[in-house]
Length: 200
Image (cartoon, rainbow, N blue to C red; front, side):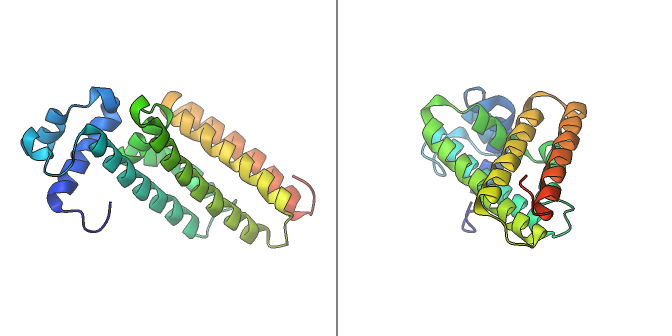
């Protein structure tokens, strides 16, 4: 949310993201959100028009927060492979961030009434990840890269991210780590080929 978010609205958003992350759109109740925020249900409507508007406010909040987290991962500059810190941080991020859990759950299991708007927002987030990765890839390799090689590597890395996001939701820590290690090995082999001037 913007820096003009009031403290009262922040309490509502923070309560709502927990409810929506844990129970989904259908399972979360406005009464429960209001109680968690320390206000009466009627008072919610001084902050948001309805449940859809609250859900979208939480979604936009989560998008902003997770895009910032991803950018910070890329800005570290200590990756052995482009995008490695982001991918390696996902398990801890999923455990620690209600916003990230909400974002993934919502993007993979969206409420029908908001499907198109949610998909547009998630796709913009994923496109920012792709742009961050391709910038990091060019910096990492150093030598000029053919655009089709950059495109192929971008699609491969995004497939890796998609796979890891799904793994977070459905398969548990041990299998997530095995998948991460396998995908990083394949990505490392492909980048090594690029560094030798070969096709990945």
